[in-house]
Amino acid sequence: MSFKSSSSQPLLPESKNTLALCFVLLTSLVGILTIAVIFNSFSLKSLSQKKVTFVQLKDGSTASVIEADGSYREPKTIKTFVSNWVNLTWGWDGKLPGTNEPDPGIKVKNTEKVPTSTWMASLMMESEFGEASLVELAQIIPDGVFEGKTRSTAYVSYLSEPREIQKGVWEIDVIATRVVLEQGIGESRQPFNRTITVKATEVPISPLGENANLIEKTVNSMRSAGLEITKIVEYNP
Image (tube, rainbow, N blue to C red; front, side):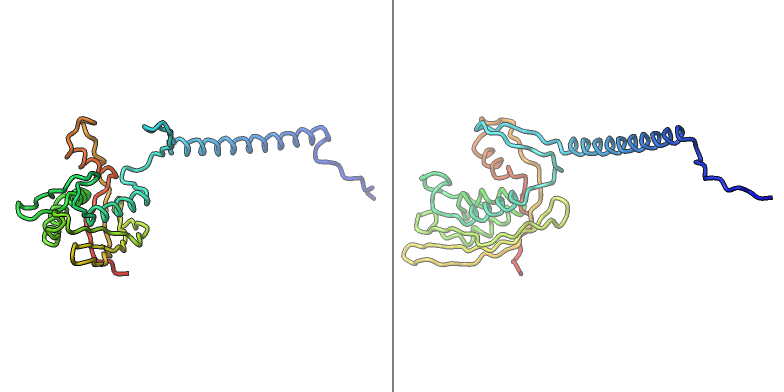
C-alpha cells in the first residue's frame, strides 16, 4: 500500500493565526505600558522626597531649597566658617569690629584681656574649648593692641575640602600666616597651620528677633552656620 504525500497544513486555520498574533501584540503593549507606569511612579516618588522649594529672601530674590538631613552642611559653608574663625581670632586693630571706636577688650578670668574680635571667634567653638582658648590667647596678646600700637591680621593660603569623619563631624586643614605690626619694632610673620575639627550644631533662633540685645545678636551671628569647632591640632601633611 502506498501513501501519497500531501502538502503540510498549518497548525491553526489562518483566521486563528491572526487572532493569536493580535493577542501577543496586545499582551506586549500592556507589558510595556505597565513598565512605563512603574518607572514614572518611582520617578515621581524620588522627586517628592527631594522636596525642592523656592523661598523669597529679604532682598526680594528667590533661592531654591532642598530638604537635607539636619546634620548636613555644605562644604562651602564649612570652609567659610573656618576661614572666618581664623580671621576673627587673629584680627586685632585696636578697634571694635565694624567701627572706629577704641576696643577696650574683653577680660578673661578678671586679669588678662583679649580683643573683642577674638572673643567673638571663641563663640564659634565648643563652650569649654572656647573658654580655655581665650585664657591661652590672653597670655600672648600684647597690651599694645589696646593702645593702638600693635595690629595683627591673618590670611589663609589653603583650605582643604572638609573630610567627614563621622556623621555631622568634619576635619579641615588650614594653612595660614599671621602678620603682626608693632609700632617702633616692625612686622613679624608666623605660620598658623592646623587641622580643625568642626561638628554640626543647632542653628540658634532668637525669640526676641530684632529686639535682642547686642550679646545675643553676636552669639546668634557667630553660630548662624550651625557649626562649632571642637578640636585644633598641628597640621601634618
